[in-house]
Amino acid sequence: MENIYELINNKVVICAEIGINHNGNLQTAKDMILAAKECGVDAVKFQGFKTEDMYSKLTPGFAHTENNVFEQIKQLEIQKEWWAELKELAKANNLFFSCSIFDDSTLNLFKETKLDFVKIASSELDNLALLEKQMELSDIFVISTGMSYLDEITRTVKYLRSKGLEKIILLECTSSYPAPAESINLFNIDFLKNTFSVPPGFSDHTMGIYHSVAAVARGAKFIEKHFTLDKNMDGPDHKLSADIDELRALVKTIREIEISLKGNQKLSISSYEKEAREIGRKSVIANQSITKGEIISQENTILKRPGKGIKPDETQFLYGRKAKVDIKNDAWITWDMVE
Image (cartoon, rainbow, N blue to C red; front, side):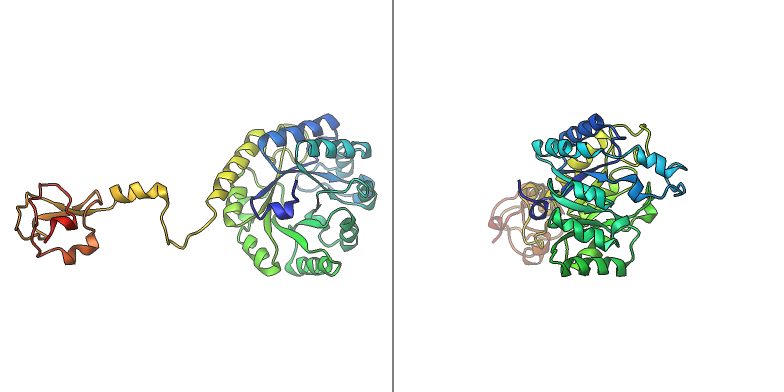
């Protein structure tokens, strides 16, 4: 299986962000990998952390979390012995496997098993020491740019490149859960691509799938969408996540749209349009019977469909000439009928 950096040259890579939606249950995590595969995604991604190394126990509740953030997040950890099983299941189903890593202790768990790509969460974009260590896991970094200023993104990209990392994908992202439409900046997809000379993508925290679809039309080559088996499950991310039906629809829609992401500078028309052109365009039609030798004029002709006759922009060369044959009323006039 080729790597995602090669794959994005041919298709949009769609990643199901399982994240913490497994609710701390190994079987649920496995079921989510299999469901994501059935939906047609290319990759699955989890969140790996040791709560003690990521949150102070005094951290207040925020946004979509409960008041006791530490206790809530603690219940959503993936146990270290699960990682090998989860990766093995993903690979058995031809899915790229990745994880957002938030601390050194979790990073150490992957030093032997590696990742297909490193996913850097927006919150870790400025944690350069942790980012550098993750270069041991993969030479491909997918970086979310939520809650980040331009100078921070610039510093991170320059730092990684100075360390020899060149395969970088930057994702436009709004770190709000859920992210309202007015907070989304899809034009940043173009900006990230042009400013940093990288493949751009979109990490979607909105409700629904429309912004991910629009991002692809905008040029995103990597789409990350939170995924859940049931929006009504307990946990902070389920309600903003795509369920099975939505994820399946997202994949189907993106695959249909990406076929059309091309241009021909209007130098040709598709085979599908040729019949429409002939029937839909207008041409010169006799609006009465015209006898052989009669002068063809605006008075005895009309412009209407189909476009099988002389074209409207050629009438200046037609009017005033004689009919070579008898022309029936409502017949289209072709040049072989004219002297």
